[in-house]
Length: 263
Length: 253
Image 1 (cartoon, each protein chain N blue to C red):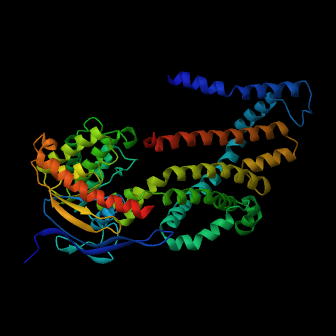
Image 2: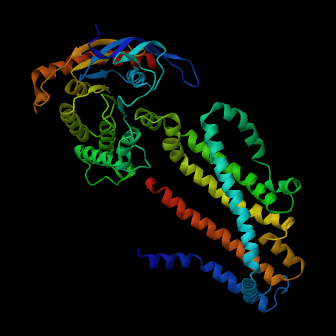
C-alpha cells in the first residue's frame, strides 16, 4: 500500500562541514512525514538545523544519511515540484518584478502569451499591481517578499518550502503577510513546510508544528495546532494562547541549552 | 535638471582645459618656450585640419581602430569565459590561476618584440598584444564577480527548473556583471596604451606610427595634433563606456 505521506523524511542525519574548522553534526536521525496539502512548521532555536532540513528536502544539499522521498521518489536535485521562498527574498536583482515572476514560467516552457497572463495574475494576487516594472532595489522588504511569493506560486509547485520568509520584515508587515499567506493557501492548497523561530507564527499558520532541539537538531515533538484560521480574534482565544504557551516552554528549554553550549 | 543645463554644467567642469589651451597658445606665441618643442595650439589645430583633409588621420585611424577593437573584443570574450570558468570549475581554477598570477604583473609592452617575431609587422602582432594585455583584467573581474554569486539565487533558479548551464547564464553572468564591466574599463584604457606603444615601435600605419613618423621628421605641429586626437579618443571611449555601463546596471539604483 502506498504511503499516505507526500513527503517522507526517513532517519536523516547531516554533517555540516565548514570550509575551515571541525565538521558539526547539524541534524541527527530526523524522521517526519508530511501529507499532501498539509501545513507543517519547523520550529526551533537558531542553529538547530531547521533550515538545513528544508534545504535537504529542496534538494539543494545532498542527502548523505537516511532518505528523503517526495511522492515516493528519492530527492536528488532541486526541481519545480518544490518551490522555495527565502528569508532574504532571493529575487534576481537585475530583473523587474515581472521578469522575476516570468522566470520560472519561461523555464517551464510555457508559451509567451500564457505566461504573461499568468505572471500578471500572480503579481495582482500578491497586491503588487503597478510595480510590475520596478526592480527589487526599488521595493520595500514586504513588497520584495510578495514578489518572491508570486514568483514561486506562479509556476505552481505542489510543495512550498518557506525558510523564515517573514523573518526580515517588521512586525506589522509580518502579521499582514501571515494572513495573506493563509488566504492564498486556502485558495490554492499546497503542501507547505514553513521554517520559523517565532512560536506564535508557527501556531497560527501550521496544522502541525515540529519542535526541533538544539544542535544536533532532532525532532523533539510534533504538536497539533489546527485552529480556525478565518477567526480574526484567534490570537486571543484561550485554546490558542495555551497552545502558544505550551510550545514556548518546549522551545525555551532548547534555546537555553543552545546558549549553554555556546558559552 | 534639463539636459541642456546638465550639458552646460559638464562643459563648465572642463574649463581648466580651456585655461591650459590659452596658456599653451600664449607661452608659445610669446616664444617663452621654443616653438619646435611646443608649436602654438592654433598651428596644431591647423595641422589637424590639413591631415583631416588629406585623409591621413582617417586612414591611420582606421588601422588603429581595427587593431584596437579586434584585440579588445577577443580579450573580453575569452577573458570573461576564462574568469567565469575559473570561478565555477575547480579544475579550470587549478590549471589557470598560477598562469594568471605570474602573467598579471608582467608589463605587457615587454611583449611587443615577441609578438612581432611571432606575427610580423602587420595587424596580427598588435591585435595579439592588445588581446594578451587586456585579457587579464577582464578575467579577474569576471572571476571575482562570478565567485561572489549568491547561493540563494543559484538555488532559486535551479528550483525553477533551470539546468546548471542555464543557471550559469541566467544567474552567475548577470551577477558578475558589475565586476566584469569594471575589468573591461581597465582593459579599454590598457588597449589605448598598448596600441599606440606597439605602433610607435614597429608599424607602417596607425596613430602610433604617425606620431613617431611626424616626430622624426620634425613635423611637430602635426605630431601634436595626432597626440591630442588619441588623447581625446581615449577620453571619449571611457565616457561612452561609462554611459553604457550605467545603462546595463540600471537595476542597481
